[in-house]
Length: 108
Length: 120
Image (tube, rainbow over all chains, first blue to last red; front, side, top):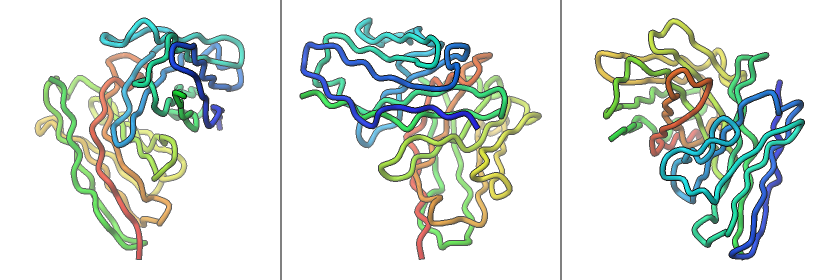
């Protein structure tokens, strides 16, 4: 089955740029979606189809996808960005939705 | 406003059964594919099941196949999941999730979830 690998944690100082990776075999040919989840809350879609932003999501949040790695980038990080971030794809080989293990973003 | 409200969670003994419901409003339910996603305490998200708008295509995660049945009632704007032979490792918050039209698993709206605890 298809596996997505995320780092368990990423730390960044306020105002800096955070990059959260999502690794998968040839993930660049798949569409990757990203979710932000704050403690006690349901996930919120922040990036879809690799790099598109839903309405209401700030331009500071962006996504890219190529080769074996998709990346969620958060520029000018704020305290309010502290959350868990999950990547997700549809695996057409297994007819399964697959999530990465999630990455906890800590704002120092 | 799109709303998805799960119910039916609670404490159940190992080997027991539970039926979760999701009442939706704010959109034309019969046009949308739906999913259940769960999250064990302190863990990541795990997809459980999918159903298309007419209940003609249904998919299950390997971890629950044979023990779970997803269904929907478009007339009642409701999604369901029947879970049998529950195990301790099925303990999780279960989310009802809408899939954007024609999107290929773009999960655009989530409910707040309902907690299922499997314990003796």
